[in-house]
Image (spheres, rainbow, N blue to C red):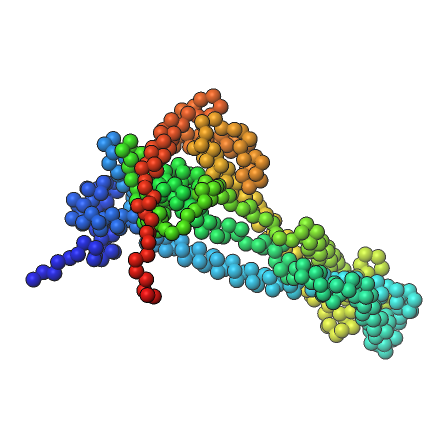
Length: 503
């Protein structure tokens, strides 16, 4: 005897495959009744799985002249989640994120070593050159070649090197001595407010991440709050006013909400499409009216969380590294290994601008370097210049991208404000709308006009003085108010508890 199949006990994937085949046979556009006739599937199964299919294949909704709801798939039934294209996009997106994170980690490590390390090295070399110059004048720095071999390199030899480290220690000591006690010992409020140096540098180079990383959650909470304060009913225009999406984007995005929150598209007796979410009304608490009617705006990207002074300091340090790197590269190409000048008293350091280069060559030779020129060329010229170029280039490129991203955010935020204003007004658009809010002030002076024109084209509005006559939009909104007035919230109340597992 053949086992009878239960209507609500079925293979979900099989039903979705049958629905997909049915819509393909109707060239991606059909009513629920047509799909039932083509597939033989029970209506409860079709209604249960159709939201998932609509979300995956980007369905749009139409209403026929007789008030029938029509599902349309303008993407030629191409899945947004399956197949080579979406799979490749996910792979490349994951690969890109991984590469970015690895690159950030490596570059952060490089920054700690290079930015501060080279800055200290260059300053130490400059100080060494200054002390060497003083030693030449007051310590008999000129020498004959015979004295050179007997004193380990001449020019003051060990005495000069000792004086250099002695001076560095004294500078460090006095700098520590004259620091405030809170800063020197890291006590009190100064320690609590002081930000770690490496985090400040990373913030300057890479920023502090996406300030709207949790926007999906924020948006969903806002939509749910609107539904719970408007009796589970929302029109497409109201959904666009909350999300700030363009009409085509909103028509696709609403499918995800229908799938996740058990909503369904409906047609009112007057022929208006709306979306009903009765499952969100069965709750114990309540949502304040102002929460459901508030406009949530995205945050703008900030260049960094540092103060302007800190960012200027990092740029100054990197600028010093560029100057010194260029200095050494120029002199190694122009002078090569000619670190000294021949004088009647013997060899001496070069004076004037090449003094630091000359003293550096002497120091490297004193430390046992057989050839100082390659060390200076690569270690003090090419490497710091490459690093400094990256240190400047990454924030500049990030700033340019951030500027473009902020423009998109401002336009999207302004779209929310304009849509909400149109829905609650008479269609006359204030040219100063949103200009007092930085997050909704794009650079385009015609942004409000373009947004209004786009909504007018979508809703079939007619131009009038100062704006547009949104006749159809107003009719739909009046229709929504009638539908909400007919909803009895008491019928969705959970009621009194009649059974408790604890008892």
